Image (tube, rainbow over all chains, first blue to last red; front, side):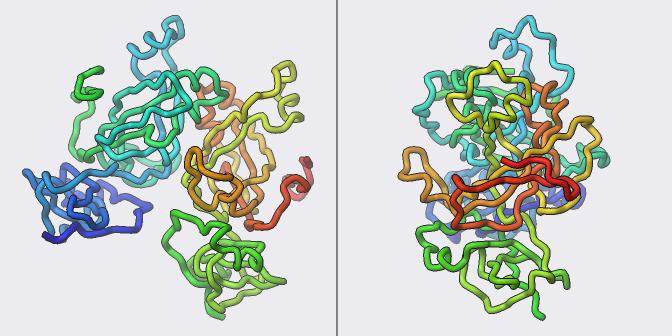
Length: 218
Length: 218
C-alpha cells in the first residue's frame, strides 16, 4: 500500500472554515498521520475505519487510503503559539487552594512553547526537574486563520476542536517568576488524535485517562 | 537587478555553527531581506555595502547582490519560541520597585508569542489595550540548533546575536494572571537587523533609541 501524501512544509495558514465548507461538511475528523510501514507524515481525514489522505489539512483527497490499524497519529496542528486559559474550571481553582479568590473577571492567559507539543497517546517521560507532575485534560480549539484585533466574529476562525493535556510541573510553577518552565517542557502538551470540525463544545465531556484509568471528567 | 533568492519555506533547523564554520568565518552579518524593487524575501550576508544572497541563513552564496540602500531588512529569525529573561538588569529591578527583593537565584523566564516578532525599524503602533507601553532594549541570542536537556556545551548551539526590543503593556502586566497579553501583542518583539555571528556579548553595549533619541544604554 502506498504511504500517505507527504507534506513536508508546515502550513502557516490553516484553511478557513469559510473557504473549506465543501470539505468541512465531509471531513469531520482531520488527522496528521503516518503509516506504520514508514515514510513521511501527511494529512488526512477519517472515514469509517480508513484514513483518506488529503493535500494539506482539510484539502482535496489524493485517493490514497490506509486502514486505521496501519497508521499512527501525530499532533494535528503546528501552532504558532499555544494559548491556554488558567483557572478555567472551578473545581481546579478549589483544588489549588484559591477558593477564597474571586472568580477571574477575564480569562487568565498563559503560553506553552511549541516544543511542548507531543503526539497523542505517547508515553510522557517524568521530567528530572520536578517531583510534582500534574495533568489536566483540556478541550483544545484549533484556530484556522489569523484573527486580527477588531476583526469580525472570532468563531469564523475556529477550524475545529481536539483533545489536549496540559502538563504542569507544579513545584516549578510555585517557585518560578512565570509559568514558563513549569508549563513548556518537551511533551508537556500532547494533542489529538484528530480535529473535530463539527463539535458543539457546550455539550462535550472531557475525560482524562492515566495509564488506562479515568482520572478526570468534566 | 535580479531579486534575492526566495526561500518561502521557513527553516525548522538553523545551521549549526559547527557545520557552517567555513561560512561563519566569512559571514558575520546574516540578514533576512527583500529588495525594494519587489519580490519575495530571502537570506543573505552583508559585505561592505552590499547584501550577498545566500541559500538559507548562512548557506552558500547564490551570486546575486544588492546594495544596502536597495533592500529592507526583516526579523532575522523564525523562532519556534521566544524565551526571555525577566529582571535581568539591576537598574530595571530597581525601576520597577522591586529594590527590596533579593536578586533572582535563577533566570526568571517568560515567553513571547511568535506573533510578536516584527521587522527592525518599523513604527510600532501604540496598542489600544494599554496606557503604559514600556520598551527595553535587549541583546537577543539566536539559537542555531535544538538543545536537548543534558546535551553538551549549549554555547555550541548559539548561531549568533542580534538586537531586540521587549515591549510590555505594563498596566496589563500588573493586572493579568501571567504576562501573556502584556508581552505578546503583535509587533511587541522587533528583532534585527542582522545576526552577528562573531560577537563577544561581555563587551557589548546595548542602546535603545525612540524616535531617534537615545533612551537606554547598558
